[in-house]
Image (cartoon, rainbow, N blue to C red; front, side):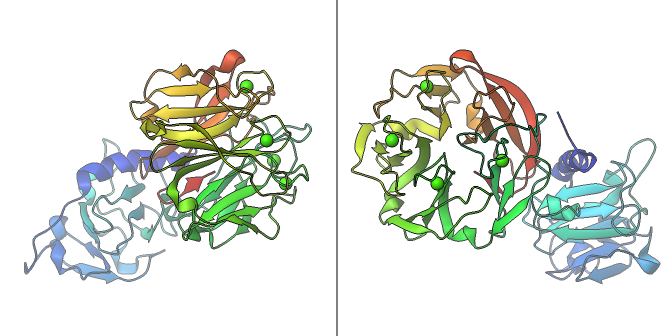
Length: 407
Ligand SMILES: [Ca+2]
Ligand SMILES: [Ca+2]
Ligand SMILES: [Ca+2]
Ligand SMILES: [Ca+2]
């Protein structure tokens, strides 16, 4: 398992943040509430007492307030707040240097004496601070997640799906809080696809939809129009084409690969009444007349087309239910799903987002990514596909920030 030093800081600090958030009464002559709304304040005594310094911008140096603060109040509205015992946002160690996640929506006060152990302390040791909408930015990292699994990158032929730039390695797509879409090739970098993706309410991809052999992306906008973005095969997407309107009646849309055996990528979608529908791809980016797969799918939480998990050459479907079990639905190659098999006995409701993006582990079998929903420490967890559709937990590979979505 790879956890970066700064990621470890965030985890430790988030625990501290749990005990630290307080709300102070209004209108006192002394105390935290002297700090104006929208500002960040330092106090040279605990509980907001003593002298106060008020800031509107992050501070790389603190001048006369260097190593002086004993308590702070974050009223900026930004959830994440980073404190450093060195100037210029430099870390010294996990106790001195903390990232706090504000449970009170960017409005919380802290006594710095809470950040201490036998050897070190934050009280009167604060030398720089900043705030941000995500922990990643708070820590000074670039916007894309620092994504890599413990496997690869590999040198091998392009994967049949999940591999947007055809280099043989599975790619993730990350949409950040700001609506930027990044491709994460797995080498800890991110390649910007473009901005404005917060206008989309669903994204899904699994292989080729328009017959050019490269993976495409489907996205639904707020009006319910479904759009197909043809993959360039170099990691980006070409000019989109409209698939059709009316997709807001769907609570889940999953590109699944070729379910009916005609060589063209298909789609499974669940409507608000819990019916699952199969939309056969026409191979030109459009879909033919839908067929009912079955009712009762509203008891399912995460739905994903992970590829062929069973090894019979036909793509399968996977769903987690609200009680935490994970089910494998083997595709029959004719557009329907066979008898389901339980492949996870519990706990999957803590990982509501399932992503099938190809083979991450390099054994030629497709794997599954699952992300947890915790706002400040959501895990990106990898499950490797094994013989017969079983999964092996490869552990948390990284974390994602609040506001980030992976596809
Ligand atoms: Ca790739
Ligand atoms: Ca294509
Ligand atoms: Ca098909
Ligand atoms: Ca199969």
